[in-house]
Amino acid sequence: MKKSLVPVPVRTCAAALMLSCHLAAGASAQSVAQAASDVSAKSAEEISVQLNDAETVNGSCRLTFVIRNSLQKPVNALGLDLVMFDTSDGVSGYAAIDFGDLPAGKTRVRQYDVAKGECTGISRVLLNEVRACDLQDAAQQDCLPLLRIDSRSEIDLIL
Image (cartoon, rainbow, N blue to C red; front, side, top):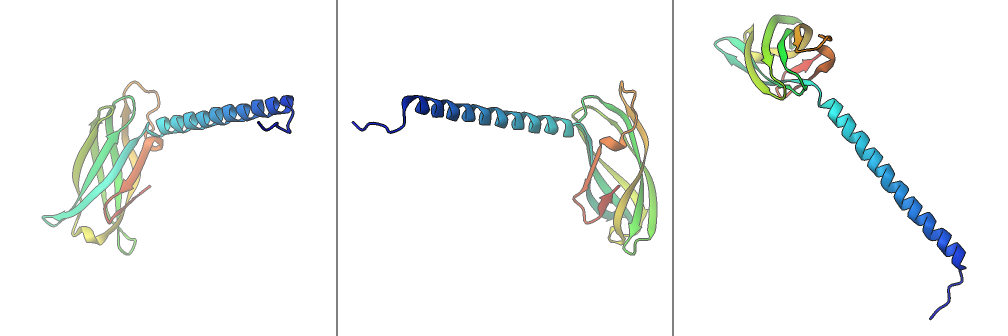
């Protein structure tokens, strides 16, 4: 049997230090995981508005939106003002749309004819203003900070 050249107190101290480091690393990883979970939970508190599709129907551009209320409370009414821009960045149309009520945790799909002419003539849609927002049982009625927008269409949706 080989005899260790490191005295017992040093080996004990080293083992204790290694154990302490492992525990600290575990606690740190747990703290990071908890912080990530907290951020994820907070970011889930939103109303997502996705421009999902654009198609020309009977000479008008029809936009399809997917709206998801990830808030813990219903939205009694949500209305948006949209401005359409053509491919040369000129304003080509304006539409006031009403998504209606959005129950908590619910996804809705809505379609709106927003401009005369082909959808290929529209390069982007500006969410110009939240014109109606009624959050159930909430003093704050400003939905703009709660909106998360994106587009699956060739048309950009912007703030």
